[in-house]
Image (cartoon, rainbow, N blue to C red; front, side):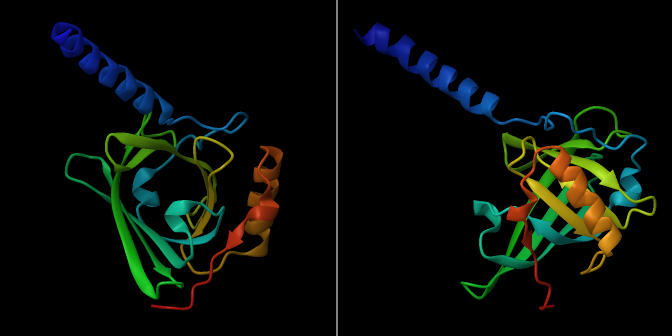
Length: 181
């Protein structure tokens, strides 16, 4: 009996671990295409979150920013910051992003809790890298980003239309306030 336990428990834990890791997807939603000829150096820096879907990691958050910088090992440091208006406190989370394929394709995987990775796909960006549409691995995750706290109506409509065509319910977007420093 003890021999069975010595084998069954580690094997069961290993299978469970593989199941958990395989559930972490770094894919891209059906029909979406990541930006090609992506310039990761131009993408680095501070971005303001203009809109997103509501999900637990950003629940009750406004004044959300994401700052991307290059790590010495060529991965990207991801520093997310936001103000929880219910708890009246700033929150910060630091993670890491890596390219899924080549650096010229805007498909990345991001982790704030290794070894769990999630998809981060830039599917639309203006030529000057001022406004971006980013999606996760499914139609549950979407972000509209800007280098400033506002986005021109033309880019807002462009991104919303693109998201709708991919199956996103854009009526559920939360428009983020930026009223604190």
